Amino acid sequence: MAITLDTIVNKVFKVVKNGYDNNEVEAFLDEILEEMENREAETNRLKEQVASLTADLKQARAALAAAPSVSAAPVRPTHSVQEDRHSAESFELVLSKAKGAYEEIVTAADQRAEEIVAAANKEASTIREDAQNQITDLTAKLADLRRQTSDYYDSVKKLMDAQNASLNQIKNLL
Figure 1 (cartoon, rainbow, N blue to C red):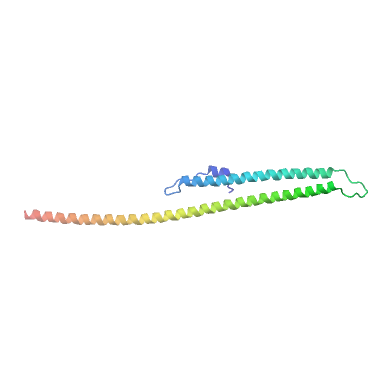
Figure 2 (figure 1 turned 90 degrees about the horizontal axis):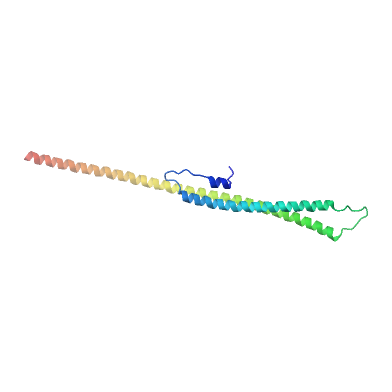
C-alpha cells in the first residue's frame, strides 16, 4: 500500500487498554506528514523545472530544425551555430542533471520514509516490551498480594478459632 499524505492525515488507530499514547502517535504522524509534504513540494517543484526545461529543449530543437537549409556549397559553420549547439548541449546537460537531482531526491525521500517507519517500529517494539514487562511485574505483585491476603485470612481465622475455644472453656467453667 502506498502511503500518501491523505493516508497519514486520515489514519485512525484503535484505542485499546494499555495501548499507545494517542497524542504521541498523533505528534509523530504530524512529523511524518510535514516531512512528506516538504518532499512532495520539492518533487513538484523539480517536476515543473524538468517540464519547463523539456519545453525549452523542444523549442530549441524546433528552431534548429526550422533554420534555413544549407546550400550545396560547403560552408564553414559560423560562430553562432556553434554557440547554438553548445547551448543545446548545455541545456541537455542541465536537463539531465535536473532529472538526476529529481531521482536523488525521490530516493532520499523514500530512504528517509523507510528510516522513519523503521524507527517507529523499533520504538513501538520497545514500548510493547516495556508494557509486557510491566504486566509481568504487576501480575507477580498481584499474585504475591493474593498470597499475603490468604495468609492473613488464615491467621485471622486461627486467632478467631482460638478465641472461640477460650470463650467455650470459660463458659464451661461458669
